[in-house]
Length: 170
Image (cartoon, rainbow, N blue to C red; front, top):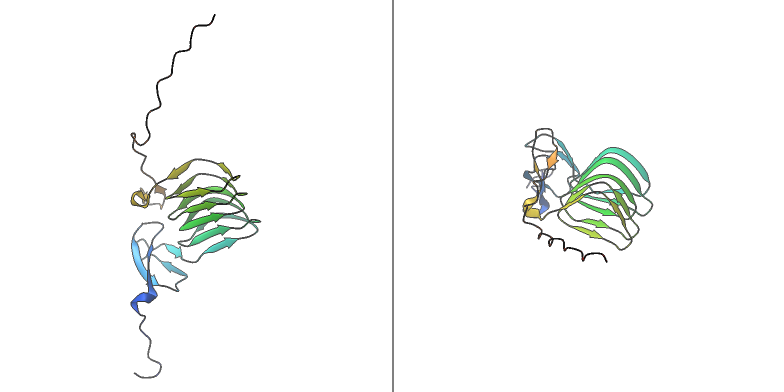
């Protein structure tokens, strides 16, 4: 082997990443920090993001984990991520491909769509929560990159018992 020849990466130096926009998997190097999806040609960040102070953004999008620390306060239109850990405050809608973990003193104001949600005792939650298994992961419905989730089956929850009649007043 000649000096200066490029080293071919071994197969264990690769990882499979699923695009946040088109939901198609693709193989990338393990140390890749950002890339362009080869199917929909949109930019993807692969690195984890950590917020430990006030941050206002239009959107937070990463295939990695988003962590909001205890002193972190994130205000955003949407968070689209691979996983979310909240110890501080989040205001905005969340779509996660992985678990959403909410600490005991955390606050979330906004809708959450995720495969699992773990909430610590004393956390403040405000919004609607769509928790679904990975088999029913969200799929894009339009060409704008907006993600929609199919509605839950009507028979998913048992029907409540019919109301009982009150005894007549004396």
